[in-house]
Image (cartoon, rainbow, N blue to C red; front, side, top):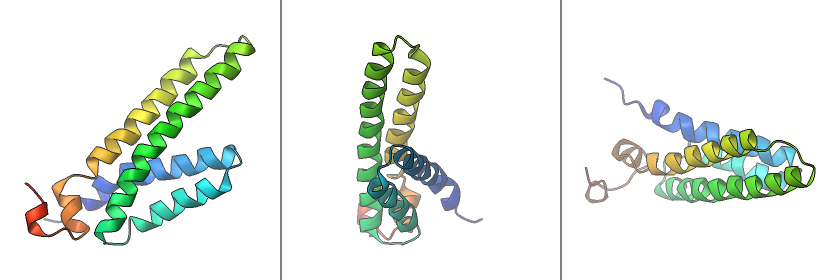
Length: 121
């Protein structure tokens, strides 16, 4: 039976593409390029790539919470509805954090080349 690596890496890939779209919308093309590079680095089977993507997921979840605060302040001054936006951004931040945790899965760590003693099954 084949290892479901592509299914385990799919949420992280989608999160990186979503974050790249967020940064492009915010006209922050450098960060969008970094997200695309993170997406491409998922194809490189090296332990450093795994750790860099984990750190990126945590930082991106913080970015989504930061965008939530900015969006709330902007909508509160214009007296627009904000709870739906807040719910969506919090859910996206939670998904990003769960992707960082998912990258700790033993099959993913084995795929990226961690030695057996660091797999901790």
